[in-house]
Image 1 (cartoon, rainbow, N blue to C red):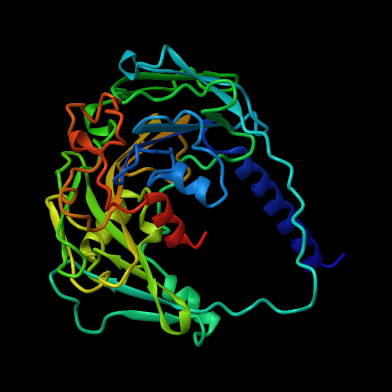
Image 2: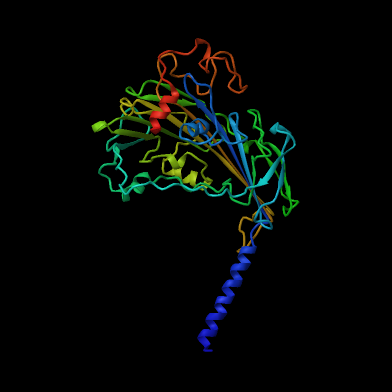
Length: 425
């Protein structure tokens, strides 16, 4: 055996050993908690909120999905995920929670079993799919008038599909890792424990995670700054043809805000045009930003003026963007802080190869959805509020679909039909 061959074999063995050693490293346990506050308000309809935010339950049912995720029947939702290095196939765990959660003494964490893939029938025949028709019109920026150079247009009949990714490229995608329902990891909620998160739940207090292979030291305290954010409280004034002013209540612990609106209008030749607008100062379709973002990413997006500073409390959707739209919906997200913990605590200048016993992360967001522009007497209504004396936080209903003491206004469009029109179902 030549010297070069021996060296190559030795190198391969060393690399294999290093790889095996690297795979055995990592914290003994990793824990993720995602907090969300959701507020959906549409005229003539009782609030329908799912844990995914932005009316996930309602949109899911319209688009053929299931009902809202377990454990989310009010404005707040919580998801948790536990990874135990010694048990990659999963292990049962317990999350002891503070009394202020008002959910009992603990949450049960169950291993996520991979679901068997279902067979999707292929389309019969050799005829190619019909090329879609219509356009997407993209607008951006707060202000009374549409800015020069807008809209950015994607024509389905002319556009090269290779350019689709460029058109839909957004500033998001750098969201921090959180609950992802990875196979083998233990999750809450689950089929054995899916109690709803009450509207008065608070994460403040002491927490402890236990289970086979979980370090006994996996305990931490959550302060007020890392609790649930309040509901998004939006008011709108004006109609799309004149411009719609959106105002909202400032949130103490919010790190920034982002608004996104979408609607549909009749286009050329009977095709349907989709219209997108965002509060960004540069072209931004917005879909990738309607979720958790890492602290460093939030700082970057603020610097780029893609998201609005936490001191902002209003934004105007320019006139003329949605004046021809059959309907338009407005979404908003408030980005909360992120809590990152480890034991031992990470040093300011961690040496190479530093490794904690465990890590924990809490991510926080608050989202809201409402109609963009409403009929007189309904516009300006606070998102999710009740005018008939019921507090938005007490879960009460005045029996008229949430329209307050004046009853349902006959001229209001049916929100279900609006959403069906928006998403083509």
